[in-house]
Length: 331
Image 1 (cartoon, rainbow, N blue to C red):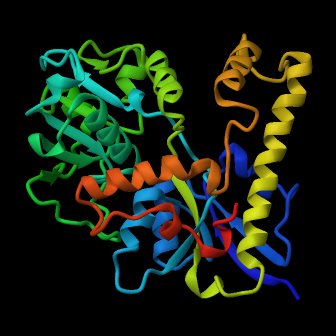
Image 2: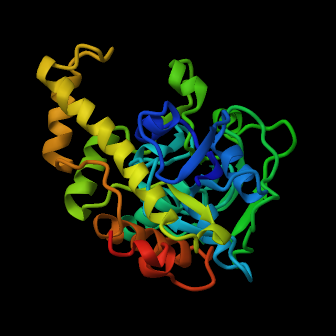
């Protein structure tokens, strides 16, 4: 008899075949649910609504420090993104290069140590000597005000000045007004996106070139989210493997559709010259450009875990072997 499970996720391309039923999980009758904000998926999982769900890397990692961690992680990454593009600056703040961030007030989307925040702070530290404790930090929403995430463990990071934006304040408006000097945000400020702002720019204007060079040098395509399963389900024979294989099958199906569409130059895609971009990305990233499993992702995950520890968000430095379900370390 199949087990009934509730799954939560944003509808990222790699998981769409699970939502629409083209791929199923062996032995599971799954009910899939999505909500507009990824952070609400995370909150619902942490508060017990889901059995299996997408969970931000830092959200999962912080929970490994509680006395009885509630989840195990699968080496499945429904969301990943290069993050040099995530740092915005006020043009009057005197910031022309990463080294100029020293001593500045920086906004950070959501919480101190969000997934893109951990990645970019770590990259800036490795490559430019950046030290987060040299800055003042303001957390909040980019274009809409959000409350503090009080449903998640929030480590007190020694020596780091962090406050949450006041009620009704948004980080995008604060950056525009010069109340903060820079903004580390998963969301692009709307005024910058619209081209109406004269005060906001990117720290790395040519971010694609910088991100491609970063990948060539490191081989890291940063993961943002993982798939977590409630610990009480982990002992059910074959369940974790079945869930993992279903997510892999869904992702592989999406990749195969892109490969097949290349034969007709992606005529179904609305973006002009998409085929040339697709070919360029395959040349750089390889045939499996969105890999799952521990082996293909060990270096990147271990790098994230090092950053998480160095930034004071973990009690000890973890490794991939401790991070993922033991039964899937062979993947």
